Image (cartoon, rainbow, N blue to C red; front, side):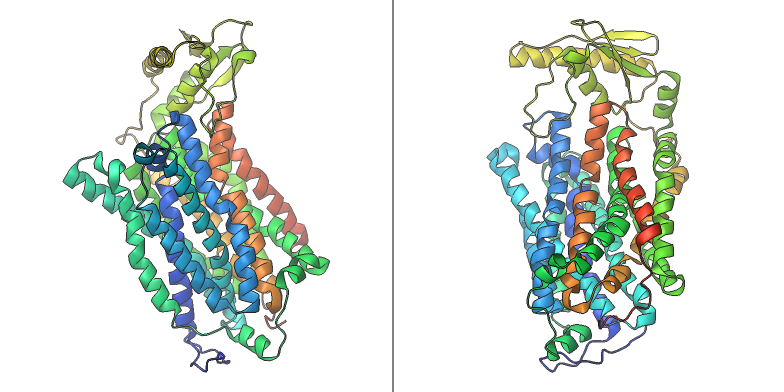
Length: 559
């Protein structure tokens, strides 16, 4: 990377930082913030047991996924607040505040009481910390990407800003690495149950070390030359939010960025790096440690391709590269996840093909298998049958049965009768459900449905091959994205205008991919049906990008 100095000193008269220092400090801080966010996402299974133990298993898992998404839901608000600060007061100060706020919230999660210790106070505090994390991250990415782009030479913006994109890979890789090491060390010293009991806190508490490094590096930075020049000329916006979203000429660009780029970005990236983890663990029953290793390998590879595709976008244009990435993922969603099943848990794929499962029940007695607040009891014969299959990760089809008749689970030619627990005392209902679940699971086992993936039969190269296709798609879209977004908007409103569509796409569309997709699966009984959610948003972006998005490569930033 060229060691190029900025031309314009900041108002304090400091010597401008080199481009290398600018990129390193920006990427390091963003890596830390992604680490904070991804530690939570990678520990969903443990979080659901620790903070939502008062809910049924499926409801607790969905609640934890919803909480993961809740952090993303507040990112657009952070984008507005810190975007206005960045456009009015400067880029540097805005994203220095965000890294401190993010670090404090993450460290605090490691100190929270569990549901068993504090009841509802525990998940309430966890929700608050997640909101703070999302709020802070909403102001982080835009500031870092803009800061680097405004320092970089015009012919190297894609390559330079792609290093900010790699921060997501390094953050995820760091989170997975710290979790894996903590899990192994704690398990060896204190037993296999210790990590779920208290060892999960270590990755959150470790973030304090990363926070100190990030603050130190960012304190060394000066203001970006484009902003300093605009400020010196008195051209800074006094109302950036009103100008960005209240004027149609700017608002239509915001909407274009959201539909043509960010809808796909949120869907593609979070499917590739997060929903795959949910799918492998919850439905394919792969061991968490194996998933961590696979995702670390995929994430490590992705770090290279962010830079490759960022560099390529400097040569052939942003639009072509991003369109390639989103189109590839659109084609790979359903074949890719079917291939994951055949390679990660071939016994499950064989059992589903050989002995399909059908739930025969009166539709009036079946509830929507989606209960994030844990209020539904799921005690009808249909609900008990479907809950058991959903928790087992088994796909099933639905067939209407006689009115008022108890539900049946047909496993090939074998029929397992379910029964209703409606009206029974809580203890009796629990016993009845356990008996029915036992019969259904015994029927599944007899038909060859595995309780978990067999490591001896797992095709690791095949699994990684699927993940590699997802990585190529995600990095081709994400690598040039920062440069493309920066080039779309004028300097005076760039921070505000760029940050909002980015965080709606990644926060509202992407952040809710695991939650929404899993909820769709739980509702339909088909483990692949959740993919329609990211597929729809990716298709929207493919069409909009192809016909409406202009090429931005080479545009001047001092506009």
